[in-house]
Image (cartoon, rainbow, N blue to C red; front, side, top):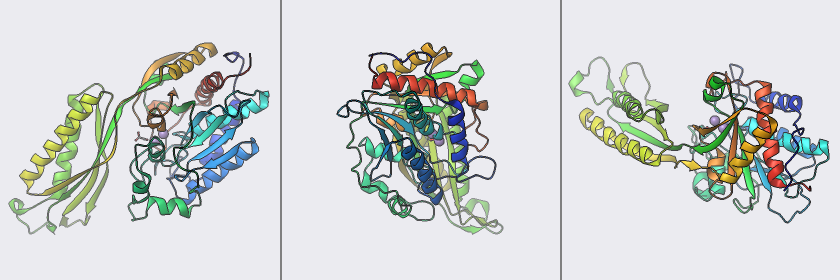
Amino acid sequence: MAAPGENLRINSDRLWDSIMEMAKIGPGIAGGNNRQTVTDEDGEGRRLFKRWCDAAGLEMGVDEMGTMFARREGTDPSLPPVYVGSHLDTQPTGGKYDGVLGVLGGLEVVRSLNDLGIKTKHPIVVTNWTNEEGARFAPAMMASGVFAGVLDQADVYEHTDKNGKKFGEELERIGWKGTEKVGDRKIHAFFELHIEQGPILEDEGIDIGVVTHGQGLKWLQVTLTGKEAHTGSTPMPKRRNAGLGMARVIELVHEIAMDYQPDAVGAVGHMEVYPNSRNIIAGRTVFTIDIRSPEKEVLDAMDGRTREGIDTICDALDIQYKIEQVGHFDPVTFDAGCVKAIRDAAERLGYTHRNIVSGAGHDACWINRVAPTAMVMCPCVDGLSHNEAEEITKEWASAGADVLFHAVVETAGIEA
Ligand code: GLV
Ligand code: MN
Ligand code: MN
């Protein structure tokens, strides 16, 4: 199969302009974005993406999870397509690049192929996976999880946001519940471009992260139930303080992660306190523990220690607990052939590169179970992500998209 020539480059101005145009939809409050999944803003972002796909001559398919698949035909339409993409949904205080770079980088690949008049043998499909973030509806990577057969579609339709709205009904309301059966597509290979969301590439002055592995994750949603009582008149020994329980669990999660350095991480990001009144001892708290490790044994050990620790804490405080696992995937090893295509592309284009493990979850982690998959990463400023101040440079974005371009074209094949 002919490899693309090193002169092949994407149009970096067009990629950057498209990212900035998408960022106008669902602006945040501090320069980033709030375009959470299956909101009106998500619907508007999808419409803009579809307009761009139509203009590029792509044919759009939408599945029952709302995932968008924009197809550029190959010279042999019977061959399974090469898929490329990521997600357009954001955190409530998200950046402009997390996910968006991967979808619009994929679009830029086909726009560049159109400009250059290059036909690939395999079709190419640019994909926008629904609800990657998991911020509004757990778990993260929801649609790719259903696609890969790991999550149950009927079950996730029933998942509710904090206002009690159901995922399935919201997807229908914004008009993006398609008719295509989820997971029916044959995928030749899947490539995802993403910002690193960590500091390694920038610190080392490296252009490209060749992602070899993704770390595993567990999300444990904990409900602690004590007793609401007056903060002034209830004697300290008589209190059943669910807020104190939550504080101790937060400390516990941090300590456990510190015991498995340098790679394991743990935090509580989502917290609800009831009734959340200044002079009432919290009677109930609901919060989610996020623990991650690149090693399955470590992840399982952290999970076990967390559960034991919660039991001990609650016993001492005379409060009850319930633990629900609302997200889980084991560490991932990406496909050697796809990883090599990315490394070869970086090499051919003269970009500096290194192997890297993804700290975040990605749709690629699920799709890797059903098709050969790999990821390419570019640096982000100060490693900051899931923050409106998330930033990258135009040069970093175009280096990542160039590598994506070459890896996709090489895998999709062009006539020698
Ligand atoms: C997805 O953004 C994650 O939580 O890693
Ligand atoms: Mn992402
Ligand atoms: Mn994210």
